[in-house]
Image 1 (cartoon, rainbow, N blue to C red):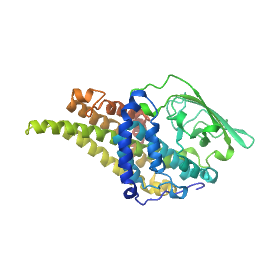
Image 2: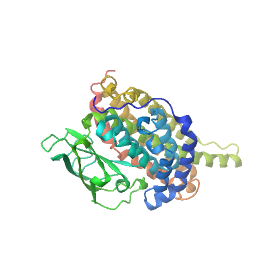
Image 3: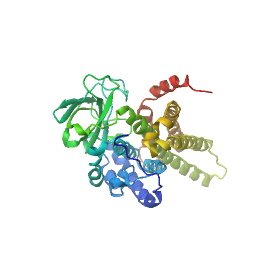
Image 4: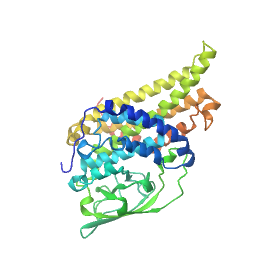
Length: 390
């Protein structure tokens, strides 16, 4: 398979666990202000870069950490405990970097060391107005221009677009290609024009991701079109890794909400030794169920993570259904955990401030069901269920 690079599977957590805890603490310190101002968490992202965590999914050949899949999941959980927005920026960046490492081709791979050492954020431009939220269709097309190519795309969301140093953009292979014949194009920030399109960024949650819409125009060398079709990139890397890392971040946010509820119950228990809180047990069970499905899905995806060429043997409808089930479950169960924490903490949890506040957690987690809409995933699973052997 041209341009494929395997990622190491050796655990690296022992070497980074201490710095991870320190970075998560920095994220937690900045989380309230990031949320309040809907502002990009620049200080937190800088801390990720200093610790090498921005490049956790990048192979050591390109100066990254080359983390194992289970380590990436644990990093996402820990960062989510500190700040949901920053954790999600980290997760989305990891997915783009992994796509470049595994499918980029030599011309793009030559650029990776500078991306790593410079702390460059890589943003995704996959959404497009007029296609109904479908990742696997594009209206925009790649247009040749000598040894360059040009594309124009209307994107309803581009997370951290104004802060990104590079972009991975999907489009039709040619102007005559069908909507599903897509490629991915790597573009550096100075090769891209972003024109704001749509309302200012002022969402309910995940406010620090800074994800407004843009009209995107990119002119890049033709060699920046990744040699592998986007369908294969999506199936082998982008979609499964997104579901796994997004889930880890949501779990981190929910785990911090659980911790706050636990603190409230402990306070009440100190004044009333007979106090019991069944809702805390229910929240813990929801977290455990989500973690169990996350572990199962990661295990099923592991052979493909180790070698994208294993997609044919280990991919297919069963893995797709499992990953879709994971995303749907995680996007609802983590909200349940935060809701139960709110009920336990009461007015202290409802407040936007204070050590027991879970308002930000709940608002952040409601975004989960919108990141690839649950109805779309359930519809896909409904079709695939017809082929399932029982």
